[in-house]
Length: 166
Image (cartoon, rainbow, N blue to C red; front, side, top):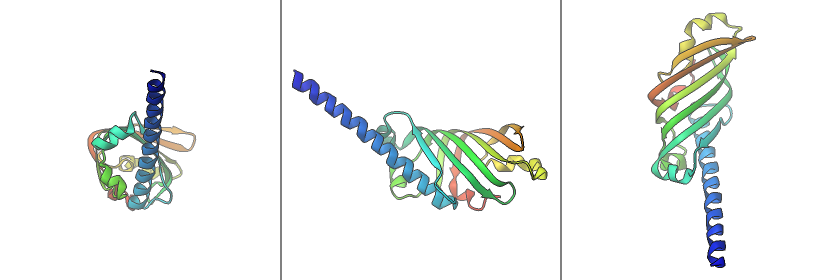
């Protein structure tokens, strides 16, 4: 009985370790794919929420992803910091393995973008800052930083669209 208990604990520990490994792999693959496809200067931060990640990867649908990209260069808004939380993300494992992320369906997306307010005329087109049909829900200032938040439902995140986004 004692041997069985120890064996079960070891198997459970290995399963948890494998899940953390799978999460790390998927997060790195997604970040590299987004950087390459959207021509970002550096990898964005990608955090896969939920447990077990292996089960989410196997079914190709993730409960929640949090993506952060800092100092993203745009023509119109200058450098922008972006944070997005995606819920119900359809992302086949084959796309992650091949580092091919182009069009990613999501059930719900919440995004926040921050940029310097030294370009006051861009505030007239702040809705253009949030892509993929995300609707701005709030715009406010924090010192000289403009903070725009928005949400969208049943969207397709077209990463190719981010290339040269102005």
